[in-house]
Image 1: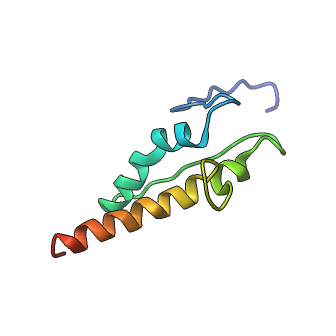
Image 2 (image 1 turned 90 degrees about the vertical axis):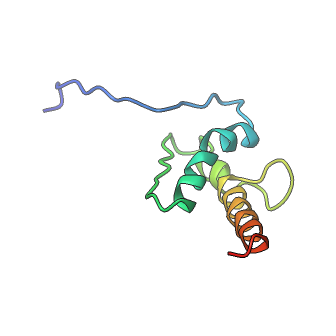
Image 3 (image 1 turned 45 degrees about the horizontal axis):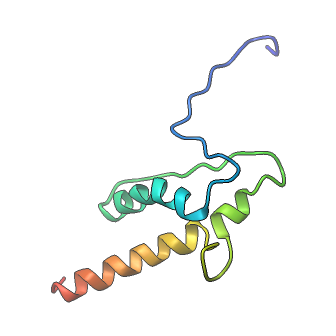
Length: 87
C-alpha cells in the first residue's frame, strides 16, 4: 500500500564533500572481511548523477581512485605480504 510508511536504517551516510579516501577508510574493513572469508556487500544508493559510479570507480590514478581500485590494491598488497611470509 502506498500510504504505508517504511523505516530504513543505514550503517553510514557520507556527505557530498566526503573524499574518496574518507569513504575507503570507512569501507576498507569490508575488504579485510572478504579476505578473511566472509561474504560482504557494499550497497551504493542515490539519485542519478549523484556520484555512485564515480565513488566506486573514480579516476585510474591519484587521490580520486574509487573504491574498486583501492580495494584491488588492498587485496594485492595483502597477497604480497602473505607471500613474503611464506603463504
